[in-house]
Each structure stands twice: as C-alpha cells, then as structure tokens.
Image (tube, rainbow, N blue to C red):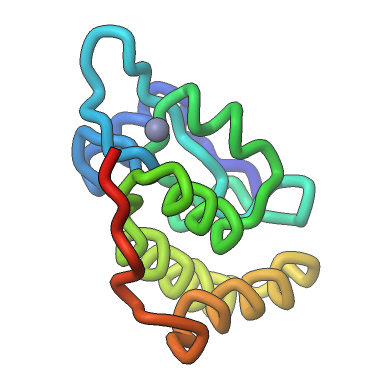
Amino acid sequence: MPDARDRPTRLADVLLRDGDDCTWCRRPFTGQVTPTTDHLVPKLKGGPSWQENEVASCRRCNRERGHTSPADWLAECDRRGWQPDRARVTDLLESLSRAIADRGGQRRARPYLAAQLRRLTNTTGGCPSGPFESG
Ligand SMILES: [Zn+2]
C-alpha cells in the first residue's frame, strides 16, 4: 500500500506529531542536526511506510541505527548516555499494531512488532527508568 504523500510532507507530519527533536538522542533539529523519518520496524523486516511506523530521527541516528530493532537501539542509546523517548517509541509501536489490525496484511511485520512490544513493555528485566550515567 503506497503512501501518496511525498517525502517532505511525511517528514513535516512526523515532526508535527513528535516534536522538533530526535526520538533517539533528543537533540533539537537545528543547524547541523538534520531531521529524517526513521522506520521503527525496518523495511527489511517488512515494516510498512505508514506514519505509525515512522519516527523523527536525526540523520546520524537514522544512519547508525540501520536495521537495528527499536528495543536494541533504545538499549544502545541508554549505553551512550542519551535519554531516548522510550514512551514515544512504545506508543507508536502500539498504534502501528492497531493500524495493522485495522488494515490487515503486514504478515512479516506482525511477529517482529509483537516481540518488540513485549520487550518494551516488560519491565521485569530491570528498573524502567534505568541507571542514568551522566557524561
Ligand atoms: Zn539523533
């Protein structure tokens, strides 16, 4: 199902929804920090180009994340001492899950998405706020 909106419009829509900062490193989009849309469920894993599957990401994070899963990349952000917007990611994955239930299809993305949501909403593995290391 192709998305009729062109790329700049999709980016503008995502920025309106998510705000003017990178979901992962939280740097504001100004000057050298270029906004892009990043697929939560990677295209490689069958992720659709729907707004529910796209988050605002700076170009650096988008490139460095590559095909890393959202849960793994959030863990990597934590390791780097960033404060990624975990709630934004979890909310979007939940709305993507609902969108897939409504619209059907996306057979490849479904199990991937379900596994990601289990990881992100299961807090038995540690304190949800996590240890914070400055610097
Ligand atoms: Zn970033």
